[in-house]
Image (cartoon, rainbow, N blue to C red; front, side, top):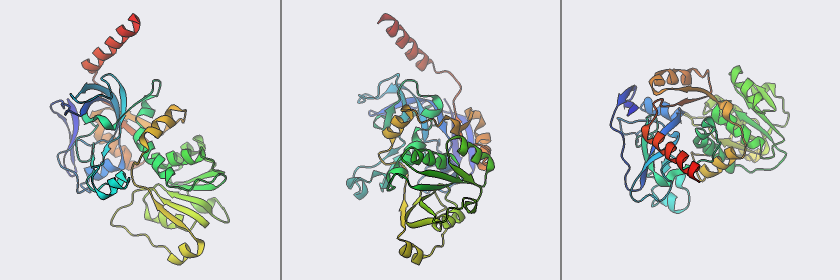
Length: 350
């Protein structure tokens, strides 16, 4: 099969390697699409100590099951799935208290084991979620990032009629804006210096947009402020825009070495709640249901490129000119074709 392999930090190549085989409790998925994420940039840059190089990155993946291990009961060969990349150990302190996203020994497809920037990938069957018929390819590829936003939303005190401010009109910021907009918010404002992204934010339902929060002019601040950038200047600015009794959600991934400055007295005096949200926690199936229920996030996918265009995808990501970029293997899989043909025959016979 063809796959993008990060051989060492800073170096990636398109290689031809053997197809994966499933372990007893695994399935092999023929990858339809896989989204490029900031985590992939950290892997490429050598910034994550847990990464075993060489590695095939890519954790926002969807595709069709083409082979199953001997112990797999679900999903079935031929089913279309989205893959939750994270596998908690189940034994550490955090797993035992129900906080698997904080697992001390987690493994993850595309991070600690080979991922979805390939024609095929072997994944734990238990982490697969079957997708409903009719869900678009773009939506299917957005299940994983949406599940992160679902977890972020679950961390917030959702009170109808409140005003939200989201920093960042990238994929994650707009997903959060869409979710809170459907959860009873009185208004959702989005701040981003990228004017092109603000246009998309308005098309997707943001009530107000601005390149700088000063332009929004809400005298008493916002009940909820969400940082979806990880940018220190945005975090510091956002903390100062939370109204008394409000909530600040740190949703964006900041550089671990950076520090933000804020007034502890302000937090005390205004009774501000500061909350963090890390990755996915019980949000995968809800994300599937939300997309199947009609939340239209397809406009977030700006580019669909073949594996051969990985370098172009990285350049587009770094330039910030698009939104979500998907890589899609282009070769037709004879096993998938045979499965579809058999399904067609079965449907005709019934």
